[in-house]
Picture 1 (tube, rainbow, N blue to C red):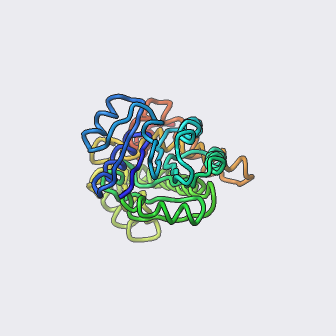
Picture 2 (picture 1 turned 90 degrees about the horizontal axis):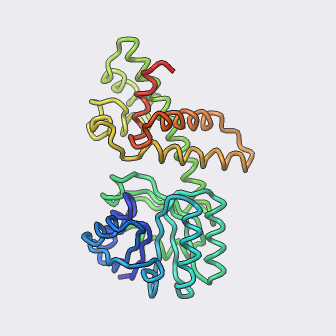
Picture 3 (picture 1 turned 135 degrees about the horizontal axis):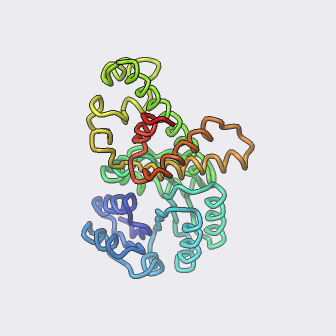
Length: 293
């Protein structure tokens, strides 16, 4: 079993670290929020007073942080305290450029590195069923895979440094666009007098099927486990969807890619958040479409 340092123990990082404990790893954790650190301790994670304390003598370091600047700041600190050959994995969702810079920092410190953002939300983090999209060397991926398998059900090596972030950004742009389309269709169905169940029964088994309708249907009833049946309490908050859509548009601008639907989805989620809905599940955007825009 490995000695693992886990930096960032929030809604995603906390349950991910707890799953590492469950399979027998020794996990030392750090988070800036004292209540979060205390909750992690109750899951068997050994609390550290500082990130550098957590990573000392660790075989593997994992970070799960909000933005690229947080990752770069944390890695600057972490890499001063890690031994050569330590594997450092970033599971945050950040911009590709920051991810590549983090890999360069790790290489300069003679450490292995992997960017491995996740898909599956808080439910997947708790259940250990996340999908990991990994970028980095074959050596780093081979060393990381058994650790990631304790937290997820599908581990994909997408390519070299930054490739995991690129895959995550593209995937979530698809998700944001598809959810907007599904929500628009249900609002149209309501106006036409078609029941939610009728549209679901047709679309979920024909050409309209997609994850946003089959698994995460934005109206109550057809998919009992979707947030629509729980007052849109977030499995994946609208503010996080907006973050990912903005990352996709930054990447599109930098690479010269044309993503008009991604841009439109980003604008719609920006408006939804501006109206005070950032803390709701991203599927709750259907409520905005029911209003006159």
